[in-house]
Length: 287
Image (cartoon, rainbow, N blue to C red; front, side, top):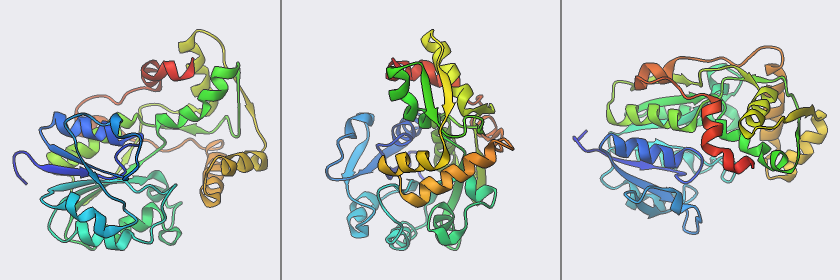
């Protein structure tokens, strides 16, 4: 690994990618981003990022972006692409020794997600037997998931969604990105599966209440029946299996809070950001 490594970020324009780019740049890395040819969100990336057009669904299109790369911040766009091409993509990444930080899921960490559902656990299983220096970032929820409430908050004083009592240890996307950047630039985390969470246990209803507090007006919560919520999620573009898995998981979190860790502070040397901090940063989206 050179003093100024080159790192490629896949699925780079989502909730995590721009933060990953900023964290890598702050650590002295050269940063590349793999984006779809027609991606309208390229402007979210820092200007210093070198953009490569390609598609994980077309493994050969990834070759130019991988040429000369020392590490890969690997995210798979599960909502828009299945994992049919994942073995070929991993083979290309593994063609030379590299560091890889894979954004995985708490579902793998707690044994809820099996390999044969072709999601995060499946990607982990592809990486483990390679010669890559891999690190798995088994994240809990993202704070950005609360953006799903923004329309209802803007339009009224109540959010309607299922399982308001579901209690999560969600993490700021920037903190997840920082842990991945440390793994890719500083090293020392190879072969580790890290549970990456935020510092608090907050129910979904409490998250909404905090949004209201930052806005300066009360915002309440009304539970929606499971089947109605599933229909709405699928209509909004969720793959049915993902909607089912999410709702079943939320139901369990009404009985026992999500697991958490101090990994962000341990790896980065700074405390993990709070949900209230995140809301202050994104408050205009809720006005």
